[in-house]
Length: 223
Ligand code: ADP
Ligand code: AMP
Image (cartoon, rainbow, N blue to C red; front, side):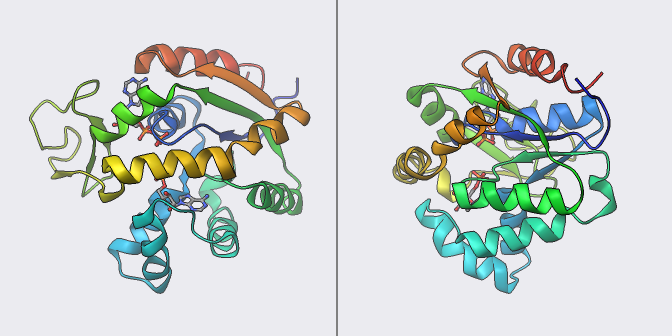
């Protein structure tokens, strides 16, 4: 298969499956740019922008921010030069409308999605992972209190920043986010399967084993 850049990958899977964790590793390993729509919203929230204020209510409930707002935010972000080699889309698209919009925005750049690794994980595993997730307030690095703990409790290994628990990682919100995933996001599996882009990766394994499986999967588009 062609190996010309840009190589755009879309990671799909339920919240807590490990999309962000794997995207950060692939970014380093493949030299592509991770774009997480959730991180973009959280950055806007932190900076108290209009977009952040709009997104907050949806995020607090574990619901999706409206498509038009989300699509505009990502369309603007992928114009930047750091996306030239390719993007690892993490958490976007999350609806069929977003998926179609992404196809259109990439077509405008004469590019396209090359592969869609789907992180397949069970409900119990993702619920357990999310409830123990901790994030660095300063650099955004992600930890898990049982499976990927920091060296010093509450302190980021990378930048010594303070770790916090996302408010939407509470048990009630986590359940709603999974429901939203099944209802609105899981149809993307069929959408990308039909386009022959889907490759399933077992995400119920330790982080490094998932990473090896991801590298194996993306080998066909990156040589
Ligand atoms: P997503 O981006 O899909 O919501 P994350 O990458 O944030 O998921 O992972 C959710 C939580 O699970 C984080 O706390 C992360 O450290 C942890 N995690 C990610 N992958 C694994 C794995 N393979 N095994 C155990 N824990 C994991
Ligand atoms: P995440 O960091 O991917 O778990 O996303 C956190 C929250 O941000 C989600 O529960 C949504 O409220 C919002 N969000 C992130 N990405 C999207 C998206 N592509 N479409 C709509 N809402 C999103």
